[in-house]
Image (cartoon, rainbow, N blue to C red; front, top):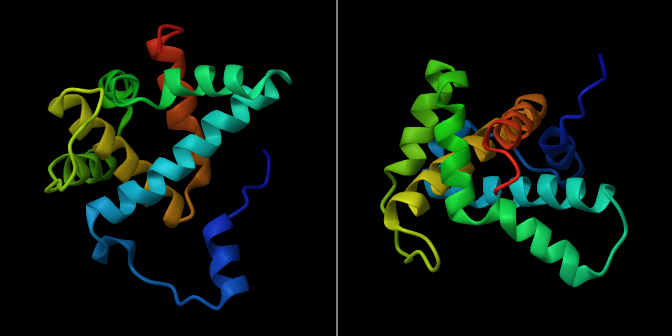
Length: 146
């Protein structure tokens, strides 16, 4: 099995950050970092599939990162989540929002935020392999329509 790189731990060490219990952070903070991690994984996968114009890369990426696609992915992954992960997802989904969804329903936006909070929490606690597993399986289950 490949060795997993604990990037958050390496960043903390390099930048002199103290380790904090991620459960003390707000769900929107976890969603903030989760959004970036999800975007990075999707962009990496899209770029690795072949060099092309940036506009084409962006169009392919948007299919996966929009709230509706994330909501469908979370619905497809529900049976795969542990009890703890399902709780973190609900924690993020039920957060009080201060922004309005642009091209998504409120429900889709909430589901996407829950997913991002879960991915952010997993990433910040060093569980990068689980982040990749959930994203890969979510894409597999939802199919090419996202």
